[in-house]
Image 1 (cartoon, helix red, strand yellow):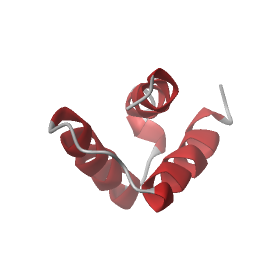
Image 2 (cartoon, one colour):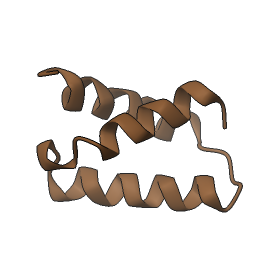
Image 3 (tube, helix red, strand yellow):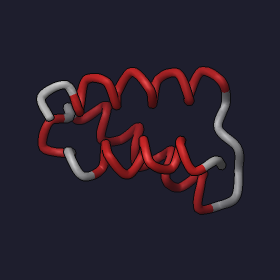
Image 4 (cartoon, helix red, strand yellow):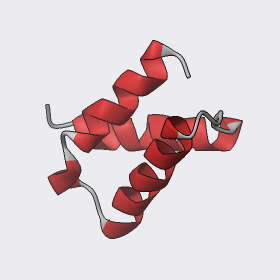
Length: 59
């Protein structure tokens, strides 16, 4: 996983209070995949980017 993707994940995790339960579960799943050394799919990366946009929209 590249550093940019890891940063998106960490930024979202730091704003978990802004996330709904599905988004939280998605982050948990993505984090588990990353820690297991697996690559994220294109769709997962796109979803993470969208989630990041919403989570960071308010700073």
